[in-house]
Amino acid sequence: MSDQVIEAVEGKGELESLKQEVRSRREEFETLRHIPGDIVRKLKKIGVYRAFVPRSLGGDELSPAQFLHLIEELSRADASTGWVASFGVSSTYLAALPKDTFEHIYGQNPDLTFAGSIFPPQKVEKTDKGFLVSGRWPYASGCMGADLIGGGIIDDSNESPLPRMAVMPADRVEIEEVWDTVGLCATGSHDIVAKNVLVSADWTFIRGAKAERSEPIFKYPAMALAAQVLAVVGLGAAREALDFLRESAGRKSITGGPSAGAKPYVQQELAKAEAALAGARAFFYEVTDKAWEQILAGDPVSPDVHLNLRLASTEAARAGADVSRRAFELGGTPAIVRGHTLNRCMMDAAAVGQHAFMGMGTWTAAGAVMLDQPGFPGYP
Image (tube, rainbow, N blue to C red; front, side):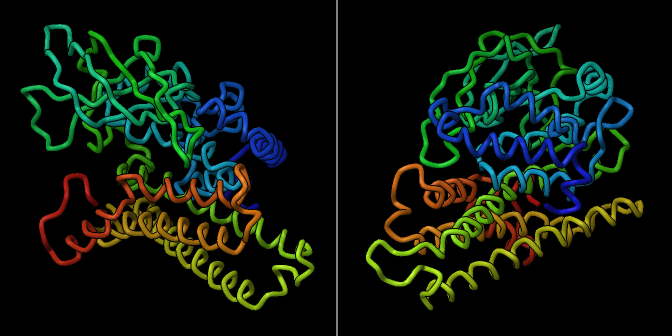
């Protein structure tokens, strides 16, 4: 376990115990299609959801790298759990709320959990008391364990190309359990439904807007960090896949042939996979540290570093998926059995790479910026 992870949690023992429990309960999670409440509470206990909350409000003020290492470590135990834990990042974009609203939220509970979905933004009615919100949003990961839930909205006064998000108490929002997938199947990324929920304007914010806080973490590019915390789940899944492959490579073949570890093609492909994963991780964490250094020095994140934060996330997701697939292939026939570690890691890592923040279009977006061509809203 890395020093970054040890520094990010109060006790190494608690994290190790949680990882063991999570790994042992994966089938239960997949049957539920969400991470159960007792695990969410244990994630809160080790500080996942207060990671970026200001110390003045009871938070831990971790660095980006510390949090990313923590999510990667949890994802080595179970990618769905790592994905749900990644929304400990929520305070960095909720910081675009008015300062009083933010302090009300986290002053009451620094371990508060937030889930939401911004697309498709729903047309709302603006009244003297705020916005009357109705609509349905898919892919609300972690909504089953959320205290607050957000939905994307749009009204006639929208001045930003980015949509606004309305923040609502979880008990005012219905959850329709439609999530049924072959990867990340326990993230509980169900549809959320609001019916005439009145949301005060000061409980809305522009997703990706400048934060209303002065702490260093809120100067870190919020949308880039939102992509990073998801991409690192794929790195964790790939690491688990390679660890499993190495641990099982000495087992004798049922055919009487040499063990997997004695086969030259396995040796070669494992070495290639390790190098690919190490390269993606190095780029990912190097640019994370570079951005943080600029912020701590009192400078804005430079355009080239900002671009590389997004590019490194796309590369991490791609490498995680590719490495996990290679490990599955090297696992041979046993790896096709339902519930096998290697096919679970492969499908989880592939699902990470399907997310819009790291999907195929983000390569195009990065190249467009490099060539001074028109970019996409919110990118980088």
